[in-house]
Image (cartoon, rainbow, N blue to C red):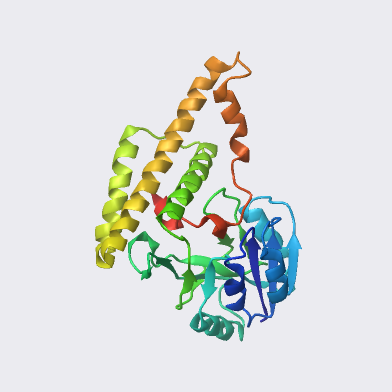
Length: 291
C-alpha cells in the first residue's frame, strides 16, 4: 500500500519544515494552506509533492479536502507542530506492506512541554486516529477536537507521534481561551446546558484525575502545571457555556433592540472559529474534553 501524508497550514513557517522532513519517506505529501502571510507556502513547496492554497472552511472540511487530493487511499494526517519519529515511520511502512486489518489506526502522541516529554496526566497516551483508509474513514464536523471516524473499530500503533504544542505558558493560556470558546459553542449547538454544580465539581475532578490518578505528580512542577491547566480548561469551558446560556435566555427581552450587544453576539457565534491551522494555536488535548 502507498501512503499520502496530508498537512493543513496557515503561518507555520517556524514548524512546517521539520514536520515535512519527518515524513520525507512517504509516497506523497500534500499541503493545503489557508493564505499564509509568512514563508509557509514556499517552504512547503520545496518539501512536498503538492501545495494548494484555499479559503478556510473549518478544520474537518479542510482535512477532508486535503485527503480528497491524495493519489493514494491510505492517509497519514499530520499537524505542522507534530513529528513522525523514525520508529513510527518504520512501523507504518511495515503495516502498509500488506493489506492492513483495520481501516484506521490510533497513534500514541507525546507532548513536549517546559523542556520535557510529558508522559502522564490526560496528555498521555493521547491516542490520535491519524492513519486511515479514506474509503472507510473521514474527519467529523466538530468545531473543536475534530477527529477521524471510521466504519470499523480502529487498531493501535505502538510508537509515538511527537507533539510540540505550546511555546510557553502564555501560548498555552491563549490556546485554552480560544478552544474553550469553540467547545462551549459546540455544546450549545448540541443543546447541552450547565450550572453552578458542574462548574464547581468538574474542574476539581479533572485536577484529581490528572495529578493523582494519571500520575501528573511524577512529572514534578511540570506535571502540576499541566494538571492545573487541564482543570482550568474544564472550568473555562463550563463557564463559557453558562455565559452563552445566559445570553440566549436574555435574548427575547432584547428582541426589540436591533443594536443589542446580546443579539449581535449571538448572531456572530457561527463565525468565531479562527481560520488558522490547528497547530498555529496549539491543541489543548482532546482527552480533557471528557469533562
